[in-house]
Length: 124
View (cartoon, helix red, strand yellow):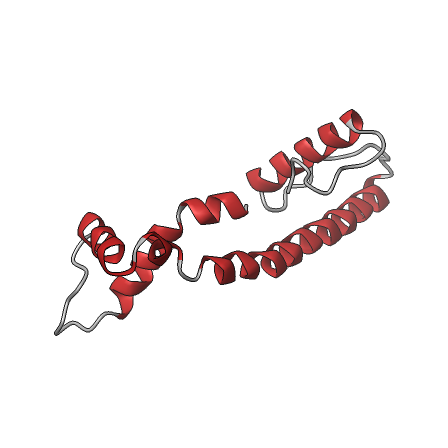
């Protein structure tokens, strides 16, 4: 998650600069030109300004999404079992592909690492 945010950080920074620039004094008038301008005026570090804050905001955002997903899955599954009497597991249609991949990877990792996931886990 943090790697992908960091990989696109220069583009994210440029996007913000393009949105807030003064229309009467244009510094950035395209992607390549804008990135070159940032590099020339601020150096390599300038391309990644604000990336730490951007990464930090993802943590609570993702936590809320995963918590909501887990709670909705449990609720829908309990409702399904109550109505049908079926005790088998169902692939709850909640948020789609992202969580389907997450669940598949989580199950695979838990089975392949029976003593738990390490701090720098593959899912993080």
